[in-house]
Length: 612
Image (spheres, rainbow, N blue to C red):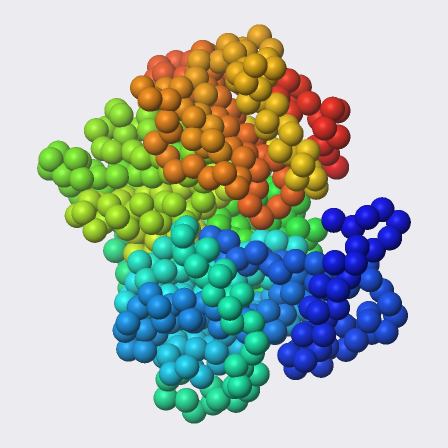
């Protein structure tokens, strides 16, 4: 760390080393010029921002702002990352040169630094081809799920998707899939990270993307994958006749991302009239001009134009994808005239119920139930557990993030099991196990079929959701976060919870609510297990504690891997039967307030609440 009021000699010399190396290696005129300018102006503060630390390659790959320096996404850091990844793959796969890798990209671009997803994808492809490794490079933008689909479908060694999903417009990312078609998990991230450090100097052909032109190692999978994906998707269409005749109208927005043409194709595959697209948002635009954040999870702000179009054409249902089309938000016009935006947990309940109901209609044989599985992440609603208990199939919970659900689903499939559905509360759904990741394209059309089917019974999505809760027990959830930019403060907050009474004990109550058990996946403690050891994998590098309460409440507090946030997730689970949802909501509100006041202590830790 820098000494107050002056430089740290060690840090300055390291900065000089990093910038000198950059000037030798960077061949992008825009980023090179901006670094030269900062050096000439003696702007140490900005140089520190660009060069203080290399982007960390984690299980989610890379994600950072585009711009110059080792802390940002740019041509040189993409080359360095891909060189490391390439060497790591060579070590792991003896048949890499026979099988190859797939690379795709979204529509992000940053004119100031000359960076764009397309450019980064071409440079990554150049790296592999220079080493004699076949590359399946999409010729145009695709949804993120097309990469894991292509890995599995063509039996490739790995996949790379250049995207920052729903992050702000200046960001980009580098997301990696393994040969099993799921996102990488540890220890691959460490191995790749180390290989990147060992291969920083650009290889001789690194900058010459003209080697792609006419290369026999370069394949464009666009046409065949587009055809095969939608053929595979047709197997999840259960009510073609209903879809053809339905009077339900849909509005779709791709929020300036990649989703438009793919969702249109998905609707055609299900014999629907294509949804009405929000014209201002249907074409890819890296500026995301009509929204503050291109994240449908943020709810109503992103959907303003969708509501207006739906009201105009009298459509009842809105389907919204995030910019890389791996997530889906859904809204429905209520009888009151208001729009209801479903939470990720509510849509997870609806889709899980629907996929099971559709499966049951086709499989009268009850012995098949013992091979049937659904998954969700530990911070998502436990509604699937309640459905599984009553219906007799298996439910498993994984750590947060689709990398865990994708990898677990693949293990189960390899054991001959049938994984019907997986979801996470962050509006991610895996409805078709031919993609071992969240997929907003398949989820959109399957939601449309569910809505059309319910309409034939005069039911809305909201009414069906209520019926699910009455049958399997109300599950009401609340999730939010506090913003905190200081890692030390975050650590202190969690350490305080582990040492609540000053004698290294966890809290026994939270306000008036009694705690029945505690699981800490940072330390690996779980007082529900006989040996007090958690079954789920633990990670010292991230904070995560789950408190279960005597009243059927569950609260999880965790840090985010990609943002300066401490997130919390609360759920009240009631047994089946007629609970009073209003009373449950009131109880949940009180529990949320207690957790915020006693466990977060925002005044003490100077935390910024969401939405400020």
